[in-house]
Length: 401
Image (cartoon, rainbow, N blue to C red; front, side):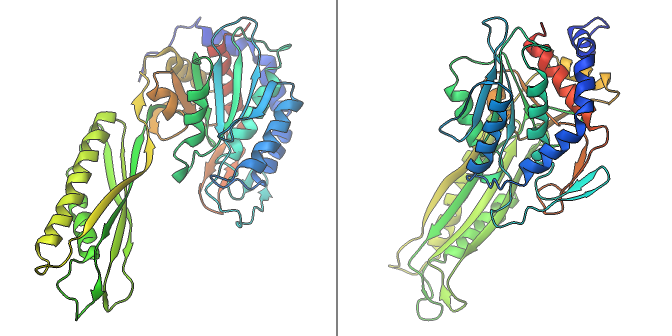
């Protein structure tokens, strides 16, 4: 665990100075939960976040933030000006969910628990960001640095962090720090960006009748051989690296030699160099499986071809556990009587971390579970404390005035 800042640290002073703000956030807790349900009831499949984005932009305008707009990637961006012309601090939460538009977005409340698709991931992050934007109003709570509020697109699955990639590449000025609010929880501090490469691998050949054309190369045989070789690759334990053949398919009928077969591969590591190394290994194996199948084919039959397409590329990296932003997050977590947990994950924070911008991802309070299922739930157990923690971290980075 990283060293704890001193008793008179800036984080502690900020937390104490925000005591009334934290009280107001707790008083508005019921309204925050209503916002969390309301935003979760707006369909936002990855790649189709426009309706939720427009709703969110209207909420930011109503809070008086400057320049609320939807950018070319569908991100919603607005700014609370600071007292000085300094590099901003950026706080973001993703708009999209894993659920298709036809999934019924109905929610059930039972005491502190709300159940329904996306209520935690990322209804909670979006609602918490609005609660913080309302409290840091430029009058009762002011910061020296501007704060950019961004609701991003394409964070989930095949979205490949599309919104965050565009957002950080298009900024006029590099932020001093970035904080992503993602889901529930008030203990985890993600400072390691879990990178990933995702591949669609295809084999194509002449195909034919399983009896009459026997001897032509079989695309499924090559795909299966590639899958077996990929599954046998030795992977490093440190940095932790995973490789999964997650989907495979091909063929037309049981009595046909398939013309095409494909597989999809998910490769993950916190190390960019390890991702590069296994990228090369994957390509060698894909080629070897094609060569192996082609070597068995009958004379004068056409060979298999193969293709490797990268369908996802999430950057990796790490912010030192000794960085002031991480130390501030550790202390802010302890100040709400939680035990900090340093972690690695794939979030919008991957993008700034890989660019060398200090960034972390944290939960936005309460407890949650069964994410990415229709039975996802959120328990508002001391939920305001998680928002208070996030606000302390943000206000410390933005330098409370």
